[in-house]
Length: 320
Image 1: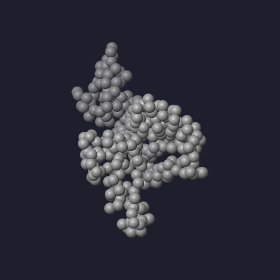
Image 2: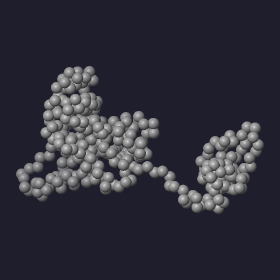
Image 3: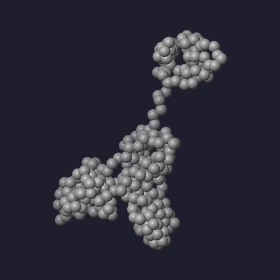
């Protein structure tokens, strides 16, 4: 008889095949193994076996108990969904050596400083790293909290706590900084050890730039590729025009400036700057970006990934 006929006869068998001890292909059951052919030199094994002739491998199952056992069997493993919140990162401490280590990693990223590699090496190791860390450490000290340390870290930790409370136990939420600790690598390794295979990656940058979202995506893919069992990734795109982002900022600003900025003459929105080439290189057509004064008046295909165009769009929507 066919394999389908054997599975039908025995009832409790699944369709997954394995190589049995008798050297033949059989079927896995909830506690029994049946071979459907003899091994070398062995005798023939009947293809149709009664329940009394099934050799148990994990304890005998009473006749007629197959349905009840299947109903009582544990559900297949379903890991939680992972969520990694990605940010730039911060030094481990205010010590100059820790600030230097952070700056070396941050400024060494090819998307953050995308100049000639030889020139970059000279500037980084002979000009920036010998002198800049002390000045940067003093700047960090002005915002460092005596109890909780880096504001970027503890505010992100607070965000994780609130998201965990909102999303519940079916999500495993971790911080993964591009540079410094906790890193993207440590977040992925934690999820690997916890049985999390499906991972949502949320770069905490509303507007796309190669030095932020682009760098984050590259690091995520690179770290994921190091794992033998690569996770299933979904990277959340730029959310510069998402209603949740726009409405949240509008409410915060409105509380200070009043409805339609009635308490002030003008509202000036300032965004972090990037090199001009980080905008022009996103224009695949090479015919739109900065070719006219109104190139950022609307989001179109040519400027859909332009940081400047997305900042303008965010400002327009927040002010509306």
